[in-house]
Image (cartoon, rainbow, N blue to C red; front, side, top):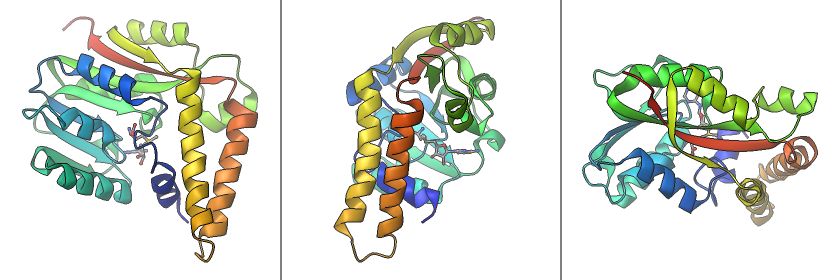
Length: 245
Ligand SMILES: C[S@@+](CC[C@H](N)C(=O)[O-])C[C@H]1O[C@@H](n2cnc3c(N)ncnc32)[C@H](O)[C@@H]1O
């Protein structure tokens, strides 16, 4: 099984591929789309869930998503068709770091995809290049709630605590106008859903040649979450505006 297929199955019950509940996602989008006629770009859009929720109930919003995962983009396209918003959603299969566009965007989203750019600050630098005057960025990334183990840093990357993260972001010329720190419940719900969806898929298909591997992947992920990072990793989502310009 490739990582793409595992990820698709694991996100069946939690289509936002990050530890945020539906209320938090709605609240962040409301603060990111104050007019309702914005042009939105999602760098590392995965299955397109942020864009689909941005389009729902905002008939004048237009959206574009960029991702490398073909199956995730296929899912996004089918979901957009199912919701009747496909004419307002454009999807690009390419490296988000190489994406260029003839027009700027009022909102640039990148949640849980900062590794595509080499970290939070490079992600913000990339987002800035796509931003129209007066635009906003909605970014989500890991933080350390406590001192991480070496193993956690190796597995997840070198985050910082919340205050240090905010210092770095503001020093780069961004002002947070809204934010959300994922609660323990959101963090746990996401991991239980990830591992539980994958395990259920495997148990429902004992004769499938991928069943044993899927169950192993769910078990490994659950063990790593519980042993390596459950007590140290958190997640922050920020709505940012350029401090000047
Ligand atoms: C954790 S998922 C987040 C998906 C989505 N932002 C969300 O919150 O639901 C990270 C996504 O980044 C994508 N990704 C990773 N590296 C990328 C790259 N270099 N260019 C584009 N997408 C990338 C992955 O394929 C995956 O869909």
